[in-house]
Every structure is written in C-alpha cells, then in structure tokens.
Length: 297
Image (cartoon, rainbow, N blue to C red; front, side, top):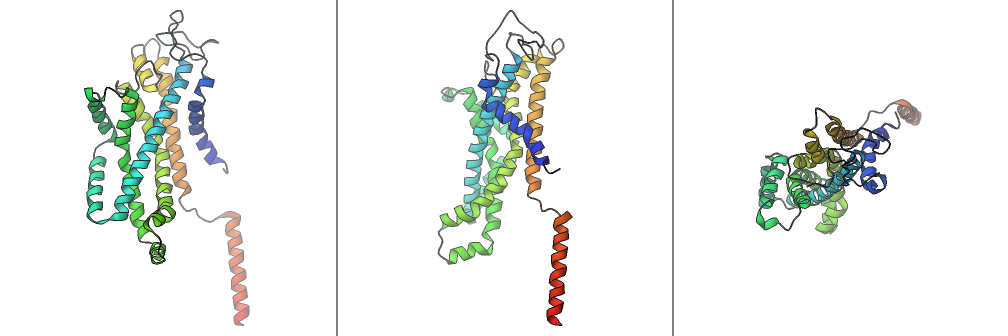
C-alpha cells in the first residue's frame, strides 16, 4: 500500500520513456516498406507483425508514442503558459479588464475543445498557412483550444490568494506587484494547474489521435496511433491486429494519465489521522492535559 502511487505512475512513465528513447527501442525504420512481408503475423523478425505495406508494427507503435509525446508536450507547455499568464493577469488586475477577459475565457470554454481544434484546422488549411506543416498546424490548433481551462483555474486561484492576510502584509511592507505574484501567488497557481494538466495529458493524446484519424493531424508516413487506426480499418475483418494494437496502446496511455491525475489530486486531499501517528497524538495530548492539571493543582 505504501508504494501504490508508483504503481499508478509506472504506466505513464513507461509511455514517456518509450517516447524519449524510441530511436533506440525501434527494431526497424517505421516508414520502411517491405513488399515481401505484407500483413504478416508476429515473428522473430517482426514482433507485432507488419501492416499492409510491410512496415513493422512494433516500430510504428513505438514511433507513434514518440510522435504523441512530443506533440502533447508542446501543447501542454504552450497552453499552460498562455492560460496561466492570461488567467493570472485577469485575476490580479480585476475590474473591467477582468470582466472582459473572463468573458472571453467563458466563450472559449462554452465550446468543446475538439470542435475548436477542428475549426482552427479548417482555417489553417487555407493558402495563407501553406508555410506550416500539418504537424505544427495541429499543435497550434490544440494549444488555442486548450488554454482556457488553465486560464479559468489560474484566475480563480489568484482571486482567492489576494484575499489572504499575508498578501496585504506584503503590500504594507512595500513589496512590488511582481514580487508578490512570483513569490506568493504563482506557486499556488502552478500547483493546481500542473495537477490538472497531468490528467489532461490523456485527453490531449486522444485529441491528437482523433485529428489524425480524421486526416487533419499527423500526415503519413509519420507513425501516429490515430493514423494507424485509419490504415487498419480496411483490413479489420481479416487482420484485426492492425486496429487492436494501436487501439490498445492509445487506451493504455489515456487511462494511465487519467489515473495519474487522480492520484495527484488525492495527494492534495487531507487524510484522516490514523495508526501510530494517531496514537502518538493521543499520548501527547494526554500528557499535556496531565501536566496542565498538575500545574493548576
């Protein structure tokens, strides 16, 4: 029981490690086609078999983990930065500025993030954005669809912290706004949004796969789980492994990050005092009470 957080952390950590060390783990070039080994089953040469172009499935699964990890990292970091800056500024300034900014945030939150990403991908498909690759269009679209949640949470934390007495004491002592925000408020903001982002990572990986599944994300021949699902749909009856393998990989990652987010959130919930610690507290309290009665006597 003492090590249960590590059991929850392990699957998400495994995904990160596979993504980081994908070039060392892959047994074949994920884009290499072997027309002499089309749609083969698992073997010593191809651990998970091959697809309809003779590409090694194991290498493509590992390469897809790297693709999803890099895209997820870029989107999370960018969305966190934008959301924390906008939300914190709105909460700290207050007044009409806060009202306008929180109205914009509410409008963005009123629409599903995936719908916003799909709309932005449609805009980016125009002639004015031909200089951007589909991969970076996807990253920008998801970032613009994901920042509002972090902005809303950041604003709420800043407003709550500004009501604390130590903030007023810091102002009386002559502390600058920048010092108050960076030393007292920002750590509380990051403590909340990072916990939320850990659970949001799974949904983001799913969104990346969804865009690729719809033909709007990662373009072939780059290995990506959503694109692998599309490629395998035509062969699902004869070769279901082409869909099952990337589907299981995607499911495992989404579930692992959801569990990780829940674990982080539960760590912040106060726990009931029990066991030896509770016994020591009772003994200490009884000793204090006995000493107080002796003094009064």
